[in-house]
Structures are given as C-alpha cells and as structure tokens.
Amino acid sequence: MSDPFAGALKQLEKIKKIVNLEENIYEQLKSPQKFLAVSIPIKMDNGKIKVFQGYRSQFNDARGPFKGGIRFHPQVNESEVKALSMWMALKTAVVNIPLGGGKGGVIVNPKELSAGELERLSRGYIDAIWQFIGPNIDVPAPDVYTDPKIMGWMMDEYEKLVGQHAPGVITGKPLSIGGSKARGYSTAQGGFYVLREAIKKLGLKNSKAAIQGFGNAGASMAKILVENDYKVVAVSDSKGGIANAKGLDVEKLMAHKEKTNTVVNFVDAKNIEDAILEQETDILVLAALENSVTAENAGQIKAHLIIELANGPITLDADEILSAANVTVVPDILANAGGVAVSYFEQVQNAYGYYWEEDEVLQKLEKLMVVSFNEVWERKEKYKSDMRMGAYALAVERVAQAMKDRGRV
Figure 1 (cartoon, rainbow, N blue to C red):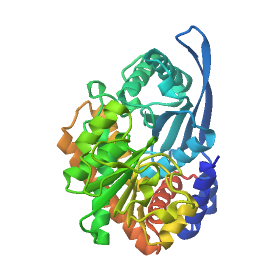
Figure 2: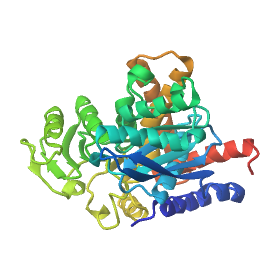
Figure 3: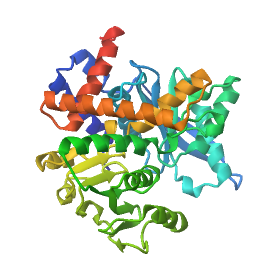
C-alpha cells in the first residue's frame, strides 16, 4: 500500500528548496499540529455493538480555523488523513481564504450500513471529536461517501452537545439548515473556471475532454463542460469506462448511471474497461481517488491538459513523466479548491445569518478562482517550475508568512 503522507512530505521537501523555506517553519510543517484517533462504538440493527475507527488530523491553523472534509471509506488510514490535511492547509492558502487545513475519516464501507446505522455512525463520530471542532476551531465538510444529509446529522449532534445553534461548525449542509447555494457542484465549477484559464494560456481549441470518475465532481464537471460547448468523449467509474468520439449525451448518461449504478453499457457508447487514460483527448479530468495515475500508466496519457478534481490522483513518479512529456497539470490544491471556497462562503453566510443568491455565489467563486490561477501561473513562471510547484510555492509562502507574523518561528 502506498504511503500518501510520505509522498506529501517529499513534495514539501521539494518546495522547501524552491522557496528557501526557513528550517524552523519546515520542521513544523512536517507533521500535523494535532492528530486524533477515536473509537466509535455503534449499536447495529442486529443489536450487536460494532466499533469503528475514526480519525481527525488538524494540520495547521496559522491562517485560520482548521478546515477539511470527512470521508467514510474502507481504505481510510492514518497516512491518508494526514496527507489530505496537509493538502487542505495548502489549498486554503492557494485561494487565499482565512482558513487552515484539517481532514477526517472513518474506516467503513457506508454501502454496507442501513440508513439508521449510517446516522448513528455520523452522530457517533461527532460525539467522539466535538470538543476539538467548532466554527472558530475546526470546520468539517463532506468528502468521499459523505453528503449534505450526513452533514445535517453531524451539525445537529454538535448543536445538541453544545446547547446552542452553531451552523458554522460544518459546511456542505442542506440549504434548509444553513447550506450555501451552488455548494453541491462548486468543486466542479471552480475546476471549470481554472480549466478555462489554462486553455487560454495553452491556446487549446475545439477541446475534447475525458473524465476519470463519475461521482458528484466528475458528473458535475461533465455537465458544465457540455453546457459550455466542450465535447465529453469518454468517462469512467469504478466499474469501467465508455467512449464516443462524437461526444456523449451527458444528461442521458446521468440517467443511465442513476438507474444502473455505473456508466458501463451506455447505449450510445462503446465500453473501454480501464482505457480512460489512453483516450485521444485534449483535456483529462481526474475525479476518482488518490494515486490513479502512476509511473506505469502515465506514459499512456495523450491529453495536453490535466485537471485534478480528485485529491492526489497523480503519484510523484507519474508527475515527473507528465512534466517531461510537456503535459500541463492543474494541481488538486488549485483545481478542486472551488469546494472549500464555497464552504468558506457558507461559513460567512452562517456568521451573518444572511444568505446569497446562486449567481452571487458563482460571481465570487469565479473571481477567486481566476485570481488564484493567475497567481499560481505567475509563481510557475518565477520559479521556472510546473504548476504544482507554483501552487505549492504560493501556498507555503502564505502559510509561512502567517506563522512568522504569529511568532511561531
């Protein structure tokens, strides 16, 4: 099994040399400020108690409260949660919002739980960590296999424990209890804004896209691309992939996925099994899980531009292969930051008790993503690096400055 946190530390070591990061700050950024491992005993429907293992990594709060999603997945582990919390600290800094980085997870396959068991687990996780979170301490959000319904249960549990309303404790909530408009597709929308800027820089025309991963982010991106006159020629999910060189009907495909639980065997396309990375396309959107692109398969990629909607989808070795092949990668900490940006907007609205219309949210998101893209591009040029190192440079400089200004050196 790969070690995501070891990979994240290698990236940090690389950026230390590029930006001449002070040793005192570098040493602090090599581990989370706080890491919680919790046991969550849940009464199952059969009356037996099952104990689930959960984590919360609070990486850095120099720029503001810890911020990061909670994932429910059988492969959640300590290394992954730590790596994701580091990337969150960098992500919030890249888009310059006043938050730090955190991440949470529970080792579970939620598909094996009943609705009641899932609710008890969601509330149980909050029971285990509630003293370590709060609107001004650490603000969780949805991630892999968690959603607005689960966030609603978690917020309700937290409010019962503290004895007051605190909608800002969690983002990604349903609209009826303090969620933000556009939050459901904000990761993809933010990704589209940076994709559009990258296309301008690279001068790509008549762009065709392939999408690995057809969950919330991937499906939303497919829809946004088609609405903006791009062709989506291939998509894949955990069960296989499909392609149609003339372009896929995304609305029909979403209905097919809803009905069959996979994109495979879609009537207007051919099945391609695991060949999504090999498709003849200008843009490749990576919206599946970590380490999807490795040294073994990176050479098969024909796209000129990769957008990382997933966290950490390209391994370090694969990154070097793509860089040498002149493939532009818009890294996760910029490309998928639309989700945390709108989460931040949600917190602001919760604090005000005043809620914005959808177009206002999108205007703010577009401005923030375009400015952030250009700042990353500028660092890339300054340091003669790829976009990933440009984004890391910008983020680490901002985190380091906040740490210095607090006297944490």
